Length: 289
Image (tube, rainbow, N blue to C red; front, top):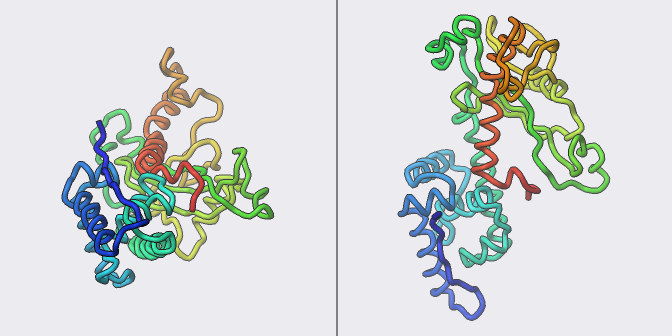
């Protein structure tokens, strides 16, 4: 059974010292127990302390007695990892809604500043291990860097802007395009496009931005049929079966089907990466704050 942090707190009728004590107890439980930290913050205690250190080094988020970087990061991760509302986190940590909101946005700014350290594009000098050691893919996919695809994340926008953010879903979304390596590590992310925008249009934007998606000469990513075939993006053959479930009863029968089957087997990494991300941080499957 998943561990839970039991916090019997209320701001009503409590003195400042009592609130501070409850807050310290909650923070100590999360920071000192790997089980609590993984269940509530969605990372190990070592990863949490490592991230705290990285944020301190950029000097973007202030560490002060009444609101340490640890507490602010806990606030941020509780909202992302549990999809808690401000008032819920405020109840747990004995803080006002305004304080929780300020901590969240302070930490969001700090984490965004670390993006270039954690999301790095591949140089393309080495063949990915998953391909190099597998005769099903080597040497035919030896220049593959990974896979690229778009995913829709629900957003809250004004009624005026809602129509252009409503695409294939019944609610407003933004189309987030991402690239990942075959070991499920994101190497590029572009968010902000309206849900009505096609994946190919968002990809064009990613290639010409000031911080573009860079694909070295001779290398390529795998994409689905929603993208156009090019020297930098390898898409499936449209005249043959493609999805892996279509091959569950009858395996590949032709060279085109064999290519599609192996293409789908490799490109599946981006679907798995999106699945892990949304499972670990449920806020991605709900309306963003």
